[in-house]
Image 1 (cartoon, rainbow, N blue to C red):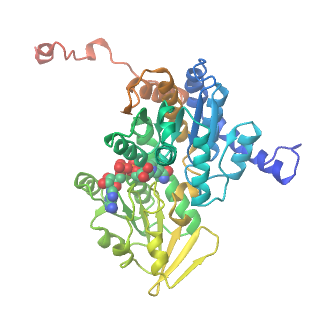
Image 2: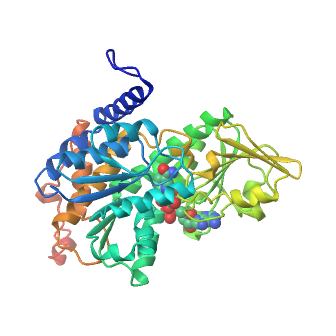
Image 3: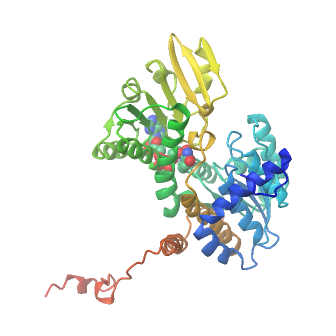
Length: 421
Ligand SMILES: NC(=O)c1ccc[n+]([C@@H]2O[C@H](COP(=O)([O-])OP(=O)(O)OC[C@H]3O[C@@H](n4cnc5c(N)ncnc54)[C@H](O)[C@@H]3O)[C@@H](O)[C@H]2O)c1
């Protein structure tokens, strides 16, 4: 929506659309605008080169802008070729930021974009899925000497960083933003739960009430999706390889079973494992005719689209983000090419939730710049995590009690706690 008076050439319209999208985020981001701006504007980010490699849409653009406003030299790249928004790219370029990604790219152009981001020699990386960090390790290992820190967004990227550390390949500190409570408790669960269901329904126009929906993986993301689907009236079946989480799903009222038993009755299957081929050949063999497959995990191959393409008799792609594979007479519909459906096929997380996630990332980057940290994987200090939640509550006018002296149990004086008379 261009404001009156905006020049209306197609390129300027695109820039103005991007600017408007970013303004919408600005309007709904009290923590980023308050606590984060105040903290990062202390001069410590002046001239620091930071690469921001997260799904390139308006909320990411707003985080990048806050870092740039604080004096950082920001390089922006998308973390998935299917989730980059053209108007946001142009709006960031208009304000003078280096953006190496284009919308509508494919895997090979995206690989080149990430290498281009690496060639700007970032000192710090705000990464998603460790996509840039891993590629630097693989293709520009000499740059590991100049990287001073990484702050990682996702569960999958965190697992990759721990694997690099175990292999002795992590010579700098890495913060796992995903492990901050203000990230995974809200973003992975409520953000992905709401927006995955929204995207699946918007793309397919299918019914939820009474439908059989299978969720593969019952971590924070899977739990959020299952909860939203259940509240919308679906019969939710869960497949989970971790026995404790499977038991938790059962206690939450989900039907739990093996993947082939769970997907064979489903009209919609949603993957949320963080791994690859959660829906592979075994599951494909038993899928219903007309089933919808959607992915909410980091890998585009959680649904094994490569195998589907190999075994399909026909593939129909009408450009509507629904690709239909006909396999032995059954139509199997894959949404958004198997990429994260809530971002590639939707608008990503609610802006209020990304206010928390990007507060973690912004303050995480500031912490990496200012604290003396050893190489290896670290968790964001609790006081920073707490300060984000406190700022969010404050922005909503919600007040908290602090424990009164008589409510505090002094564990150092353990005998005192035992006195009952
Ligand atoms: N779509 C989004 O916007 C979004 C947001 C946050 C996280 N993510 C991504 O979603 C994925 C899941 O994140 P999470 O925080 O829930 O992770 P998690 O580790 O808490 O949960 C994943 C669960 O999947 C289970 N699992 C693994 N392989 C399985 C298989 N083959 N079959 C059944 N269960 C299996 C694991 O045991 C685990 O309990 C990650 O890739 C993460 O990066 C996506």
